[in-house]
Length: 129
Ligand SMILES: Cc1cc2nc3c(=O)[nH]c(=O)nc-3n(C[C@H](O)[C@H](O)[C@H](O)COP(=O)(O)O)c2cc1C
Image (cartoon, rainbow, N blue to C red; front, side, top):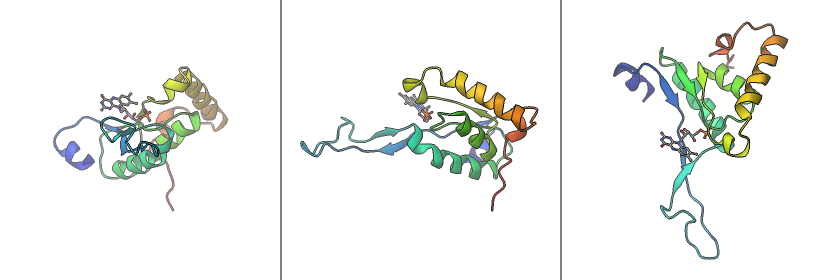
């Protein structure tokens, strides 16, 4: 899909969206969401997002905006190492509205401690086995 979007002229990719989940009330035996299924976001999907960004980054040259479960500065570093050039934060804001500021501060500290000039140096720098 990433390669198809690039071939069709996309300037960048934003990934990932939610993964479809389902929750059932064991007493009523009814799905708790009226639509029966719904989008699962937040920390649970982070490893899937990292994997997908990493795979897509190996196939396309256009920049990837990484999202899906990012909640800490460590998550931000990880997502950039996987191949993201920029990040989005969604669900984390519901429980920690100041998470972007905390992530920025943590990222800045990480760059200083590791002698890295800018976050762009992190993009795609994972060293796969
Ligand atoms: C309340 C809510 C509404 C969302 N609405 C949309 C939407 O309208 N269109 C869309 O493409 N993604 C939508 N998303 C998905 C987010 O853009 C994002 O891809 C996903 O939540 C994963 O990131 P996160 O874990 O940081 O929230 C929504 C997510 C949430 C939690």
